[in-house]
Each structure stands twice: as C-alpha cells, then as structure tokens.
Length: 581
Figure 1 (tube, rainbow, N blue to C red):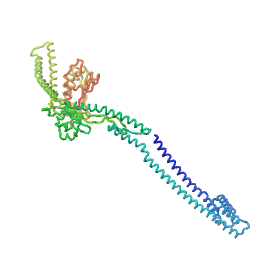
Figure 2 (figure 1 turned 45 degrees about the vertical axis):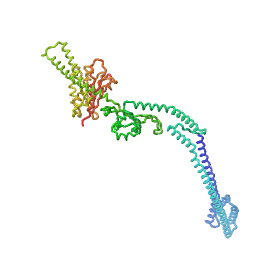
Figure 3 (figure 1 turned 135 degrees about the vertical axis):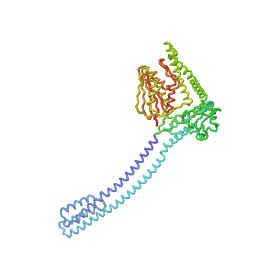
Figure 4 (figure 1 turned 30 degrees about the vertical axis):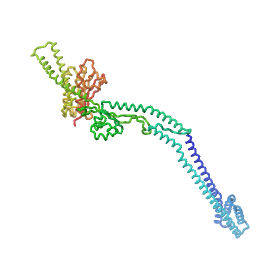
C-alpha cells in the first residue's frame, strides 16, 4: 500500500509541476500580447480618426468636425505610452490651435494643417516602432517560454518513463516470485522458500508461504513411505486375484496388468506395462475386444485353460477430484477421469452349472408331461358315466386332482419355455398381425374364468390400428398371462380394463385391475425368475416364471414391458411392440 501511495503521489506532483510551469509562461505570453493591443493599438486608432477628419473636410473646419477632432485628441493625450510621444502630442495640440486661431488667414491655416499632419505621422511612427519592438519582445518571450516548456516536458517525460518502467517492478517482481514458488510447490518441490526483508504485506505473505511449504514437506516425508507400502500392497493384491485385471491411465497407457490377464492375451507384463493400449490392441484381437467394450458389461467366450471358457467383462472409469482453474477463474471441486480398469471375471463354472440346471429343467419338464397327460386322460375317463358313477366326495377329489394336474402342466410348459430361452432355442414366427386379433384371442381364452368370478372385461381400443411384426401365439400368451394374474388377484364382481392404443410409433397393450396393488419394493423384481410377491394366502401363487418368460418373449420381439401400480389403486401391466414398417 505504501509503495502504491508513494507512486501515485509522485505522479500527482509531476502533473502539478508541469501544469504550473505551463500556466506561468502562458500567462507571460498573454500579458505581452495584451500590452501590444491595449496601448499602441488605441493610439493608432486615435491618430487614424484625426487624419480621416482632416482628409474628408476642407478648411475652415466646421464646429461638429472640430468637436470630433478634439475628442480624439483628448483620447490620445490620455494614452501617451512611448518616449517622445508626449512632446509630439503637445506640438500637435499647438499646431491644431494655430490652425483654428480667428486671426489666421488661409495660408496660415494651411501651414498649421501641414504641421498637424506631420505631428500625426510622428506619433504613428513612434507607436509603430513600439509595436515592432514589443512584438519582437513578445516573440522572444514566446521562444523562451517554448524552450522552457520543451525542457520541462522532456524532463517530465524522462522521469515518468523511468517511473513507468521501474515502478511496476516494485509490485510485479514479488508477485512473479510468488508465482514461480507456487509453481514449484505444485510440482511437489516442498523445499522452495521465499525471502523478503521489507516490512510490508509481501513479507507477511512470504512468511505464511514458507510455513505452508515446511508443513507440506513434513507431510510428504511422513507419508511417502506409507504410500509406497500401500502401493506395493495393492499391486500384490491385484497380482494374486483370480480375475484378469488391466489398468489404463488417462492417456491410454497400460499402468498395470496381473498374471491372469497377461496369460489371457498371451503377452508378458513387461511387454505391456507402459505401452499405449491403442498400439497394442491393433496386434491383439482379444485386447481389442476388451478395450472396445464401450463401458458396458458383457460376456466373452474365450479359449482358456485348455477349454472354452466364459468371462464377464466389467469396465470402470476411475474418477478423481479436480481442483483446477475453471472458467471465470472460479475454483471448485469437480471430477476428472484418471483412467479405466478392465476386469474379466471367470464365470465358466457358473455357466456350466447354469447349463446343467437348464438341461435338468428341460429334461424333468419333458419327462413330467407324459405322466401328467396320462393322469389327465385317466381323469377324463373317470368322469365318463360309462366307466361307473361316483359319489359327491369322489367327484370333489377328482376335481381337485384335475386342478392340480392343470397347474402342474402349466408349470412344466413354462419351464420348457424357460429352458428354450436360456439355451437360445426360442423360435419365433414373426408375421404382420392385427393387434385387435391378438387381444380378442386372449380375451376369449380367459372369458370362462372371468365369468366364474363375475368379472367384467372392458376393451378400450380403436377399430383400426397399425399392424405389428410379432409372433401371434407368444404375444397372445403374454396377454393371457397378464389377464390370468389380474383375474387371480381381483375381487369378485369387479372389472378389468384391456387397452390397446398407438403411441410414439408403438402399439401399447395394457391390462388394468382394481385389486389392492403391489408395493413399490416388489415392482422392480416382478419380472425376475422365480420371484413371487408375498400373499396373504387367499390367492394361489404361481411358479414365478410367467412374467419372466413374458419379458423374454416381448424383448425378443424388440418390445418393452413394464408395470405401474400403487397400493389401494390396483395394477396396470403393459407391453409395447413397434409398428410394422
């Protein structure tokens, strides 16, 4: 602050100094010019007026002319400024009086007139020489003033130029030292110190900076060994993991790769670490597949461990805090990428178990269908009166057996469908279908079940809807599943609303019931396999496969499936299929 005050005070003094000199000499020049105009110009004016009166009027002069001449003569008597001018004015006055004397004849008047004219020329000559002399003095004064002003301006310019060049350094040089010191600190040179010996703000700031550098140096020395130990520990953990791990930095250079990953891509760690991944993937097909995963988890089939193995690829971006300068010089915390980590989890064992489970389910389901079909045939024969009559209790037992057989057949059919989906053997017969026909087929299939519970089926749909490219049987099965579930959980004498409409290049199918609804915590898991919403025991639960299989069918047809529900308001199960081109 003191430096700035002294600097601006010096500039203020220099402006006052140069301004004062300029005003002084300008005033002198102005005074010289005023003298010339004020004194000599008036004399020339008076003599010129008197000469004009004499030139324009003949002798003898009239009274009016005499009064004008005497008035000009009196003005000249009061404006005598030059040496000899007073005697000339006195002689002029005497000659004028001689010219007006009553006893003077015309010749005497003519002689006096010539003397008057001569004295006027003497007065004019004296004043003209005075004007020239004073003009020369004024010019000399102007030249002198100009010389002094140029000298003062040059001195002021040199002083101010030196000030402009040197003064900013008093403020900027310490700031430059601070900038370089901070840059060294950012490069982790914590031994950097600043030395200022003045009693000003920079000295206080330098002391605080040096204290900060000391503390940072202590922290660096105390934590460096711990950081190195932690780094070695993490590297040892990564190396011992059974999963293949590859780490890249933000420049796509390989930071680390464990033994499992190196074996998979058939490269030695020494050949990979420190190399650019973009160059390596051009020569390695598997590495190219891993790095081009675009951040999505996916399954890869790789020949490893002398057999075809399955791996689940996961990629995670490493985000660290970013405290760099942002726009408008505002510093705030944000995240920036420090690289990526790719993890290949060996899921071969789980795939094999899953395949064994799928084969087991398919085998068991297929084997169960044959005896169940025989049971259904036997039940049909028992109901035939030709075989023999049954009492009431026997009929109830047969009816229960029939219901359980139907339920078992449905479960086995669902298990077979599920096994087809999991093995990739799901066959879809795509045709351009009218959505109304699919809905009508589904409603007709559950019509009897709805009549038994006295539930009204209400269809909301236009007569003309765009066709969809779908498997009619599988799509109708999904809709029938929706309707069966809605009938199971709806109270008697209620209604179901089946709605079909076109929305955003899709045909949306939905089934709405007015039951108690589904809690939000269960809605996200409804389409998971084997999941069943807990019930109060009043409704028979299914296998937990119907909605999962429905999701597989709809997604295989490039559609979407979802549920909307709220407790006390019922549920709305929906799926949408794209409009056929």
